[in-house]
Image (cartoon, rainbow, N blue to C red):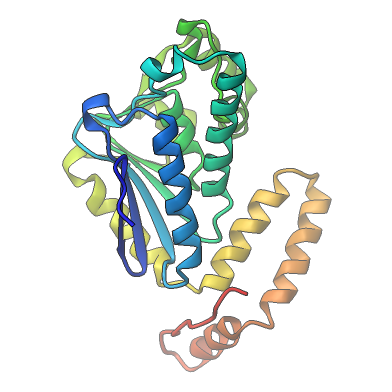
Amino acid sequence: MSFENIILEVKNPIATILFNRPKALNALNNALFDELDTALDQIRENTDIKVLILTGAGDKAFVAGADIAELVKMNPLEGKSFSRKGQKVFSKIEDLPIPAIAAVNGFALGGGLEAALGCDFIYASDKALFGLPEINLGLIPGFGGTQRLARRVGSNRAKELIFTGKNINAQEALEYGIVNKVIEHDKLMEEVLKTANLIAYKGKVALRSAKEVIQNGLNVDLESGCRIENDVFGLNMASEDAKEGTHAFLEKRKPVFKGELY
């Protein structure tokens, strides 16, 4: 299906979602969230897709935040519903069985940073700008930012950014641990695609398992996390990909992973 607020491109094994409201700096509204929710369902159902990339249309913004023109008209219950919708959609990115990469090509403010934090990791243009400036509007982040940022960089740095509402550039975001890599603006997508293709070569079963174990382990103590890892490692041994990978290593050839998720 076609969308008005996002663009979904699928070139197997990689899918790309572009936030596509460039005149509004790709600001998030209810309609965009609904379309993003549908697109994520389509990606989950397409077993040929092995990596998702999120980026922004245009040359200025990944996502500059929530659409304030829509937000200002909401009553408290509508605001709570809008917040919950954003949380659910960004959690759906996080819960995909495939890796998701944010290619931040400009402003990633408020909901934009929250969208990026829902991805597994972030590559940033050297022109990118990051922040959670909601405090300047008398608000707080509402799409998971208070939780994911604190888990990403620690509570002290998260509090500093949220309490002050200040923005930081790509290099500062790298130093904070928000982003993995800073890339020249014109080469951002080239570098993201290199990494996406490298990941796409791996087996789907092991990728899903690794993502699940890391995320689930963050919510428990180390000993419990190691038990989760131990159980999933054992299950992985039963997969066709594990058989192919280990035999290919011994036979000194490249593995051809064909395992499917069930």
